[in-house]
Amino acid sequence: MAGVVVTFDFPRPQFILGKSPKVGTISGTIAFDASYPTGGESITDITGKFKTCYTVVCESNTGYMFEFDKTNSKLKVLAPVNVVAGSGTAATNNFVFKNTVLEVDGSGTAFQQPGVELIDTTNLAALTAVRFIATGKL
Image 1: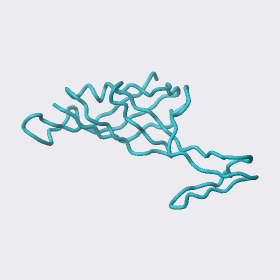
Image 2: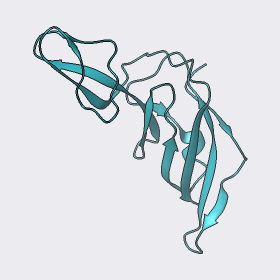
Image 3: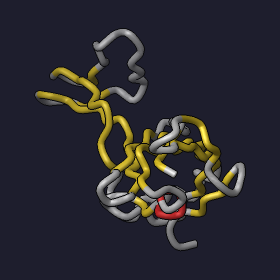
Image 4: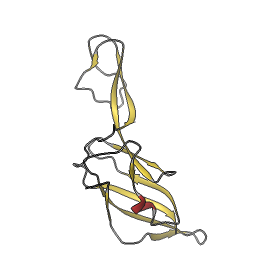
């Protein structure tokens, strides 16, 4: 598979708001492939449904987060990253809820970055049904 495969819940954006400009929404799922490109996956299948696409929002999926690059009509995939200042490594059992303290194996201070784009050619083939909703000018 090359790039993403988009499956729509309905074939055209549905009118939701306004007389001028008319605004619509469309939803569906995105299936990724085995080689994520740095800079994001092209999602013109989604953005092309609108005269102007305002936003594309995806649900997080298996720990991955998504960021819409409106300028380039791409979807970036992000993941949280454990970082250690000093020596040592972040413990493998780190989970951040309301507490910002992470455990460290060794010395140092660990913290988690909110999201970093995946490296080139990351295999995302297991992400076969990432839910999205998009809005734009009809």
